[in-house]
Length: 258
Length: 93
Image (tube, chains in turn purple, brown):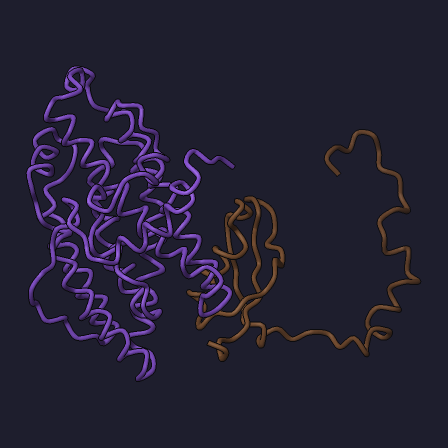
């Protein structure tokens, strides 16, 4: 994947950037997985309950692979479990979008659609460098098929489903700016030919959102202030509550095993 | 979502085999029914192909007509191809 030479020095700036980059990939999957898991037993229909938790499990598996890789790169002996369960909110690098509350089904589906579309575009760019992306992309293409299908059906559904979808599309829009922001970590990955410039994902993302919203009879959300910070550990207040629940067991009973 | 129609799901487990009835589920339309079938019935690598049919579109035989439909075949054992000998030279029969 990446030559040993670049990684020989554990304190190298590149190595620290790569660790950070891998945490971003892992944490967005992990946090969204935890959110979707909250639907377990509460889905609007049995079939949907299973589907949402299937997606949650896919993302959890992907998070595990990325964290394993991150753990190797960090080289400090922290396992993937320790990375998942023993970091605090400011050390998480997930997108703000994925930590937002489930809300109603419209909110969950819209969050998923915004994320799946970005996720699939990103993984296509990462395919060249990492086997994890290849496995993940197949799963994510199905996630996208499902969430995009729901956006169209609910947007172009009843008056109530349309109203709820429009509200979700508008409300979550403020968290989509961050998906395409570039910072020093991204730049280091672009230079090393590991990751894409996030800005290049924006236009295909917009095109697909536009065509899907048109089909769903949804209006284009008003561009307002875009929230940012998740990628560098500045989160909304919601992440703390999520982590409290997710990490409770390892915090209360350190090193507990199955 | 209580008004979602019921669908019958048929899964083909391998190429070359026929689709077999796997169960039923609710979905708003055919495309979502295939998605749901994938999530409900192929989680453990059960299939390579999925058919869904609206349960309402299946016309079934009437259990009350069992005798006239199926009884007559019972006494006609000669319909089983077991009354001739297969020559040794014939393979793959």
